[in-house]
Length: 388
Image (cartoon, rainbow, N blue to C red):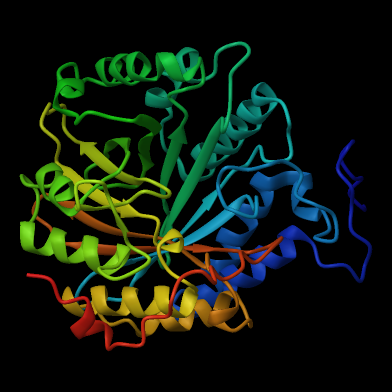
């Protein structure tokens, strides 16, 4: 029996490229890069398509169904590679399942339905998410998102599932209170006091499903961050020299890096984020992540890849998989756009080596043009970005 199109969602003709076809092809090619079998990628691809529902059949010839905050071109799917020394990178996929719904309430319901379907498929509880429903899905919820999920894809195994919630659902003025109450309900009553000063709280995230140590994570936005700021925030988790190197290597020690009025180099465009994770009911963070939006501090993706290569090499990781992943995502020249590599992150978790994560855009709808005002850095990156 032929499935009927969902009301209000256009369906592509037989010769048109759809959103689902675009991201499914990317997932299959990325899976091959990291060694996932065709069986694995077929399963994960079906979960992705099921969660997008009718929106997966929407033709790419139409504009995005909503102004998704997930990516610059409003694609509801983003990929990432989590790299560690001496191992194959882990592939993740981030999805906004309610992307096609303009109303935040409808988007939330679609997202919750997708998570509960996964819970049935992979037999994991959703009690933590259920305990937060009234906080993050109030009547008249505000944007820019209702619920995202990420799958940590694992060969031959159930994935790890992460759920991302919007602390500003009841208004940005209530975000801090929402985060504090959510942490209290989840058993981290004193954790909010351990968070740094914030210019905003973009996400609260939960690990669901197959995780050795499930985390609750709070993301914090930082305006005008400097390398000294980054080192102070991560001082209990990682080496100050490594954090300083990462900051300058990703954001740039040469133009287009911005100088503040006091002469200190600061991120004056899109702000940095930090992520603070909590496990086992302890109030002290068990992990720290520094996220820098590299796409806003480079001329193009060729330069972003050079910076990522320098960072991966510094931390003892092979950049080959990242290069191959970019070719798996797109056939365009890297110097034709700035945004295929959206963020680079330095991740510290207790009792584990540092990890570098590259967040990769699907570019389903548009390629962000090069930032021509930025001069190209022709120096060797390992020398130009060497910071003590």
